[in-house]
Length: 151
Length: 151
Length: 151
Length: 151
Image (tube, rainbow over all chains, first blue to last red; front, side, top):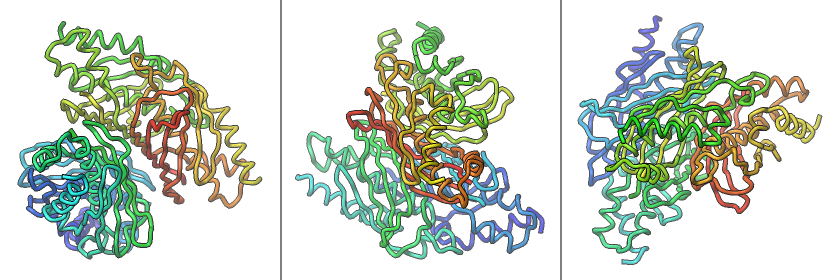
């Protein structure tokens, strides 16, 4: 399998088999070993504060964690000697979040949201990613940093 | 109004008017200026990783953020000169999360989950809380720290 | 006083009156409301691990905290109605670090180090900055995020 | 060698061979796989803010990082099959801080300071510790969380 085929298969898997991501409407739209992108639309059920009608802080954290986790996953796959469904499944099974920091910059208002992640540390055991959340007008809603176990 | 009446009214409001908390099944069961407690039950829709059947990291972060936010809210209310529905609403409208760190210690498995928060810094502008998530068997799933704008 | 005069006076004050910064050889070389820069040279006394001859993690954290604190300070000064030594001293007296996260990316090796900070949230009470540490060869040693009380 | 002999040798090594820890006057006074303790005395050179005469935030971060690193080190040693100077040196060479969060609760005032660390996640690759800084009167100055590479 080619890397881009692998990535597309993982995108399909992630978008169709992750209950919580589906509940929140998260779509993985792009990912490779350098960066990844998650998109989701406003839904009233994502409201945290009913007075202000803004995203719950947990929605923001969830989107950033997913974005960071997918770019960490791409780093795992890139380090595989042999790319097969088995080696991918086995190595992705080792992926877990060690810690996540979210910095809330502006109220989470908008119609569409884009979470992006960039890898800043890539190793055989631990990967670190930086994430951002923007709305469709380019307003910067949140920053994040995630540390992931990858091996 | 007495503090405990106020707390009960806020508990009712929080449990019945917050869409995302209701979506996830979060129940605020106790809160005062020192500590607070959130409980929720396992639901398949909270699954992050379908292979391991564990909570999505975003669910954990959401529960910790809510627990920390409620104990910060109790600190705001305690500092009010006059406790009326208006002063409460006005001051709670100022509550927002500045940043949140979540440390994932063990896979999120269990039937029931309890998130607790304790205040560690209480000021007129900023409050800081430490949070923990356990399952019904007392297994320690996650730690967290949240910094909240309160004034 | 003009803003740039003010900035130069504060740079002089910071570089000549802060015992711990002088102990570590930190020099504030540039700062305004958007970004700031700290430089320091390798010294054997900054070694954390004698086997690997790399910077102590605390040196890195100290440099990032100073860089973030100075850009937060510039934000305080920019919001002053009247710029006098008194208003500056009074407002800088309110500056304090609420929390600081440091992500260590590579071993702290080099002859010269540059810590930079950029403001990502600027408010009347709280400011948030993102920081980076590089060596003279442009190697990226650390990332950081700091939340500061400014009012 | 017995574990307690090993611990004492490492304490001696740490207290006599780490330039930056000696510069700051840090003394490792106790450590095992569950917790560790660092003590240091006030010195004027540790001042960050000359107006308030309080510890530089970097001193606090340095003390917490050392406390967390030593309890992580004890976890490495406990997992060794064979305890010899060579296996200890080899495994401690792998110890490094991945990330560190410091929460500043109160101004760093006092004559003596005690930093303590407790392990909250212990694994073959990554360990996580929670830390606290108090002064001689028991005032709680700072909280911290550190994630360490241990394998």
